[in-house]
Amino acid sequence: MKIAAPTIRWTPWRFVTAFGVVSLLSDVVYEGARSVIGPYLATLGASAALVGSVTGVGEAFALAGRLGTGPLTDRTQAYWRLVLIGYLLTLVAVPALGLTSALWLAALLFVAERAGKAIRGPARDVMLSHAASATGRGKGFAVHEALDQAGAVAGPLLVAAVLAATAQRYRPAFLALAVPAVAVLLLLLWLRAGVPDPRRFEPGPEPGAAPAPPGARLPRVFWTYLAFTVLTTAGYATFGVLSFHLATRHVVPVAVVPVVYAAAMGIDALAALASGWLYDRAGFLALAAVPLLTALIPLAALTRTPATAVTGVLAWGAVLGIQESTMRAAIADIVPAARRGTAYGIFAAGLGGATLVGGLLTGALYDYSITALIITVAGIQAVALALFVAVRPAARPVRPA
Image (cartoon, rainbow, N blue to C red; front, side, top):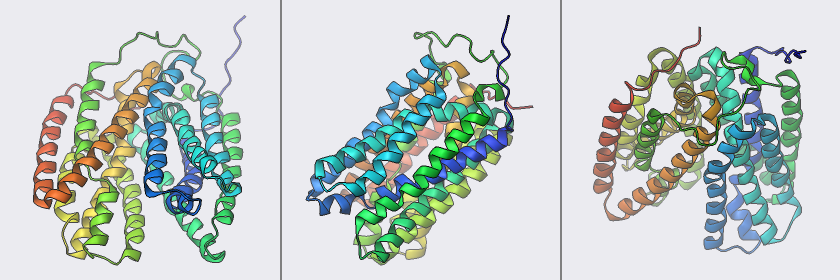
């Protein structure tokens, strides 16, 4: 006798929005911690080299770790279990930073927080892809990213407020982040109860069917799309380079730099919504904005005119918003559901590696010649645009009814 599968009581939009609130609250937690982790480790005796090593290892775990957790997601299909474990690591590690005075333990907790992101990332994106199949991939991922970035702005502001109220004491600031952390766990449990199997949002093979064989290949168009993503991101300056320019060339006062960053995060959210809406109507053509905007960033951001430089940084935020929303949405349209966890893991690792290359390249060229930097980035983006032209005809996203 066949047992009926559990039904979903939630609409796809309700699921996407609720998961966006989860990301908003979790961003309050870990972006709040990331905004002060450098100076905090310094108070425990860390050198600049050690801070760089700890944060570098943490980011490597967050991105490269998905090469393992992506295939694990496809193989086990234990989406909620992986999501809960990943969030739990983050939500325990961050407040615990306020309970230790040992440098080695604080460094370990920071890396554990980043590892939690690697564990939950592919499983979360697969679940979102199923719900977004009914809302429109672009809009679904865009709304999630917009809510996520709201938390990225609120978290550092919360930490700054607590530091100001406690005479720059870090312990109360980290402990204050336990409040949104508890809210995240409660909301996740509520989400899981309401939507035990998000695969039922998307028409296709019956949930619970055999997962993809370990040797199943990803479609060729995915690898071409990944190459485009890596290439365009390899010419994308990091905010570290842009903020270095703003501060050392006295383009804006140092105290204004965090405000410029917060404004860029706001543009990130708006760009995610706009590009997501356009993607659902124009398909992959919406992503042509990425190499075009990326080529313009150093041309504007690395000037000494404040208004022009800030405009360039805002363009940087717009590209980041498209990368983290619409470019993720496109994966779900070109990769079968059974292999999406693997695809998201590889995509995140490729994006992370390319971001590292972009930071190293633009930083080195900045020291050598800003003109050379502008020309090099423009050349890379021209090649990326040509690759985009090649990948677009092969990518035929399926639109929801």
